[in-house]
Image (cartoon, rainbow, N blue to C red; front, side, top):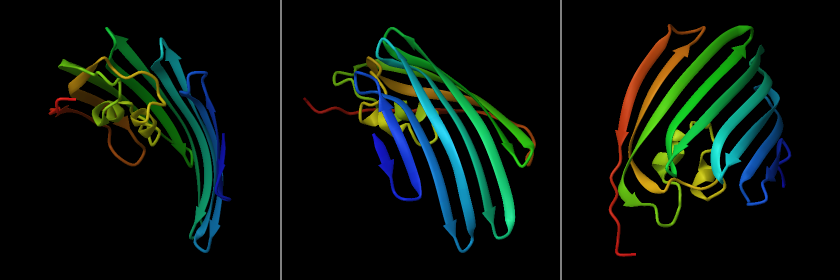
Length: 184
């Protein structure tokens, strides 16, 4: 599948079961304020119809108000499943902007309740923990493999960031989720 709007185009490939396998994109924007040109590739891997890895690489050169910027980055995420449920997400990324390096790492731990996921759909909570920039929305429409067997009730994120323009940061947060269901 090739998608193009004149300034950006993306080639999307799928597995035999209709899950997204890769997205390759390139862009070239110009206006009175500057220009932006780059490319990127996102890859997805599955095992037993469940998403087990996501990786992203991108390069971008831009010029805005006379200043030039160059960015190159990579991002990798591993998904751990247990008893049909996504229980842990580990991600690691690095970026070089105009020669300056930054890194980040995070881990999501997901807890489940007793409510079975009868329709097998990803919830907003599960899409949140995919830890993807914009591609997590594909999980809501069934394009990132099978969802967890049960509904998640909470997830905890722990992160660490090392950046050239900030001091090192780390933290931890927990999000709790509740559901109410009709008779269907």
